[in-house]
Length: 476
Ligand SMILES: Nc1ncnc2c1ncn2[C@@H]1O[C@H](COP(=O)(O)OP(=O)(O)OP(=O)(O)O)[C@@H](O)[C@H]1O
Ligand SMILES: [Mg+2]
Image (cartoon, rainbow, N blue to C red; front, side):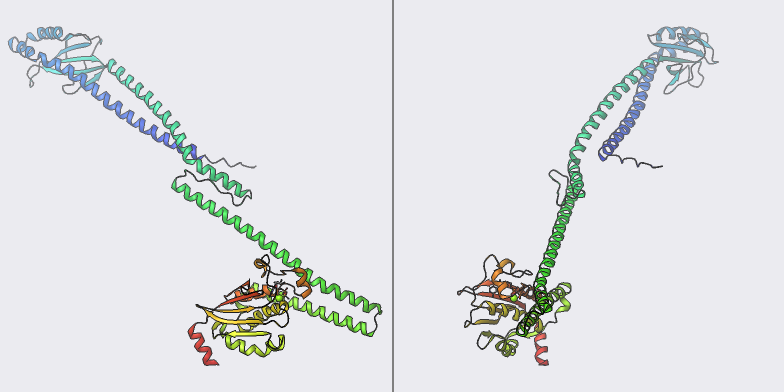
């Protein structure tokens, strides 16, 4: 048996309902109080007016009783009955033994309860009573009665008017409450729509928060920020997936080229159609392609290690760039020839890994050497700029096209593809340079020389802390 969870009550209905219930309770309480107070006032006023009638007759009663008692009591009863007779007022007089002496009441029998102060309610009438004769030895009791019907009519009318007004107030409150709650909750409604759209996959959707009260505005702002963050995260994820896909495609492509060449040479060798000289050439070509593949695989490995944990791949130390370059002079001459690389270095001690810096420098020099016509110098400088050390490599080659500049450090990016392919690069050298420099907390940038043709690469590194410099000087 499946049970369907009841739909939760709507906030709007709940708010209006609560407000209306509260007002109803208040109105009922006010109505009840008003009823009790008005009833009491009406009864007291009626009783007071009856009592004032008796007070007017007090001298007559006194006079009659002192002049001819006791036989005068029945005469007095008759006089009183006549004097007090008035429309809507009934009179009952009894002697001290409780015998009815005179009555204008329509109640067939019985005497009302005594009400010497205040009033009593008896047979649908308001009753007041007064003792006749001396207070210590009264000769009888006088009752004045008046029907309570008109009082109840006044009370009922009052309650009817009050009820009607209350009903109007309740309706107006409910309607106005609904309008005001609707208005206040409109931004919430918009937020609900926005979150539904986000849940449906439309990341980045935001709610319009115009006119929202502070609490709702804050909630809405949080939702909007979250939505933008999710959209950014998804975009980033997509971009990195696309980057990875491109990287794999490029890597596969780069590896396939030498593999295809090797397979071609192998099938020629297999067929036994090559003479000794041709076989030697094929083997040499295969060795060259294998070396190319190895370089490629090593480059990829370097990059993936730097990607995975840059911190563990560098071992920085205080490195005086001028001394380091001086130490590399024989290697530079050996690799690029006498006088090809001109070094102009000021003493500057940076915080860097000498092994990694050598990789950076040779990648930059390889490129410079590749593009610079023979006889033109490649310049390497080292200097301090503020609280940074700067290493530059400048050449006299054709320079870099503006369109290539933003992409130069991307993996497998080769500026002028035809020329680069001819020159043999895979487009990983500068990507390794950047990964390596950044792992050493530095930055690298490329530009064209301002003084004529040629490219200029700048590697900026943090200076070594003074105590590290002292320690490394002590070691050496
Ligand atoms: N000194 C330079 N002068 C002109 N263009 C350059 C220079 N250095 C790099 N480039 C351009 O930048 C591209 C990327 O260089 P990068 O070193 O990353 O790759 P590569 O040299 O082509 O291959 P690899 O370094 O992997 O053997 C080059 O293909 C070239 O177009
Ligand atoms: Mg290169």
